[in-house]
Length: 464
Length: 151
Image (cartoon, one colour):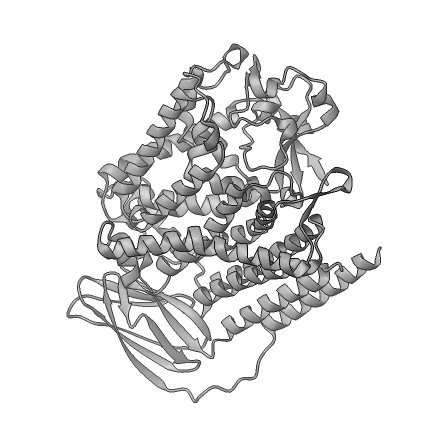
């Protein structure tokens, strides 16, 4: 069930025009410049520094609580990091070049890296230093500056948004979780696409650029790699692409094209939520200090534990649950293909398909985690707005506003229903996945227990 | 409506009802008699010592906050009470622990880079909030499996 909202004339005009995305990007880029400047030149006190407060509190909360759950990967289309590189690549900021031509060296991204493994390991690398990055304005500023430089160089050497598609550590999980969004850009009629050989949606035309994320819309079955930038809507001469409002999580109902790198992302993000919940919002001061003391022997131990937990223990435990489920079913896995025909499935495809159940659960967990510090610390945003560098300015008269925790008693009452909803969604998907693989419902029980254990573990961290 | 669909709806509704009962039903649980608790908490970058404070519901809690290095504060989530201390000048906080559960205690005065994460815990027993949440999770999981189970 879906509704093509882009068929509403006003919405269509908005999506086909370039001003909406460009205007938002211009604002985010301006904020990003302030973030880098305040990070490098502003006060080292994180909660008085615009960079720290507006990136790791305001933007992070917006991304996790609003943008991903409701708009999928839309943030990527207005993200300031790839914007300068893309404008250079296009030698245009708003209107397209004839034929959607791009000015790059046109190198192809290596085939073995055409996945999100680099993004996964990039995220883990950032996670290792997160206690430092999240609390040091200078490090935040330098890391974001490095992101923008890498993105710029990548844009000049490689095609399209190679950085966003294959390198950005944030883009990996934003893409995976965006499958939960109640919006999507999809084709209307496959027959029309089949009859259109030019594929201007992919190669570009006078009306716009080829898909910056290397998608062929007729083959797109989920939101993972679509930022909803609207280029395909503009370049389709058949008006066969639409912006849909649909059932949340609709992308997760199929098992087509599930991959190990995406599965690993879901597992890694689950592990990271646990680590952050213990280290950052747990009551263990020595652990926070160790996580921030980069380069010390204690930090190396912390880094080792984090890597083993995220990259080995959590995926390993989930793999064992999948194998146990398969053993319980006493049937080899098979995948339901077109027309309901079952084809023998490989063990890794079963693992990857089951890992998709961690998308609703993981998103719920990350929203719950984000809620635990957002409302409490949001009031730091007002002084930082008036005095972004911490130099004693008072631009908007809010510099002296005191820290005021908002609705601190309400947070558990928001976290519990969220986690329960994520758990139920995960179990429903697990049972569906078992059916799609021709396995009895019993085979979904171990992974369901894995999800239950994750939720009980987090509830214990938050509420016990 | 098919038999599976109607079973799904019935079991789903029963599960939702049980989850709500687990989360909201009043539990007549008599705890120990309320008493006055004097608790000394040391604050230093970036931790409280003890990091977890346990009291019983109804207790009058008197926290003496001592700052060991720089100015620190102590704010209790959910109770919305706070105090602050500087080295040599302790702060005091008195309140009645009339809400059961676990509540973060936080530094209320910016004290350095990790200040937003300078967090401890006040656990007011019996911690039914956690038990209710765990029970609701188990019920939700079993209910979801039962409602969506297709032999």
